[in-house]
Image 1 (cartoon, rainbow, N blue to C red):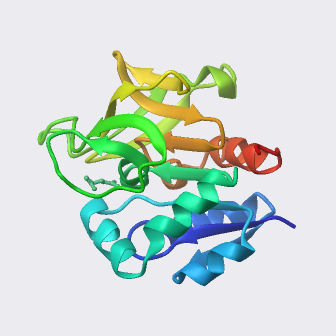
Image 2 (image 1 turned 90 degrees about the vertical axis):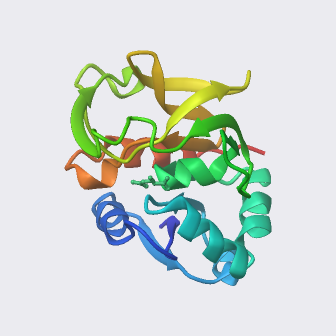
Image 3 (image 1 turned 90 degrees about the horizontal axis):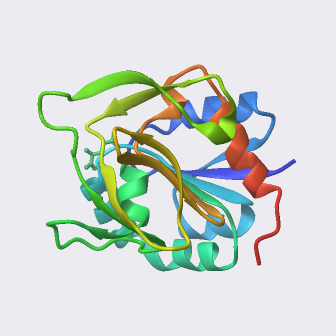
Length: 193
Ligand code: GLN
């Protein structure tokens, strides 16, 4: 059975664990870098990207996750996880893992819209719309050539993929729809390098 790690430094960890169990894989809470050697895919959850980033730095996660990505292992970042996987946070000078060719803006939906749920179209997942929960969500403002856009809301990019790397600005672990987790598990079953 595939083992999927969920980076468990801060943020929405348990919800991902539950969905992964439901999808029939073995979820593992990742708290130390040595655990990464043992997993087939990694989820970086939502939370506060500055807090998660500081803890990642403290526990030397940046380099280890970068190596994992370059080996072709799939990584899925939701919300703060998306921010941390980007190569640049616009208007901020903060270290990221810098594995995906995207530039992002934090809290991009404005203060008024702290959180919202919208049914969005994700053509790759079929005709049925996906109930996307946004919580102080970022948007992707620039993408490189290798990046495939998977979902947009009014021209704002909210989900994308670059080979083995997947990101969404929203939280699929907070809805009952497990199609995105299953899509990610398909990436885990492929060989990328
Ligand atoms: N606003 C948070 C940040 O900038 C992200 C919020 C989330 O992960 N739901 O880090």
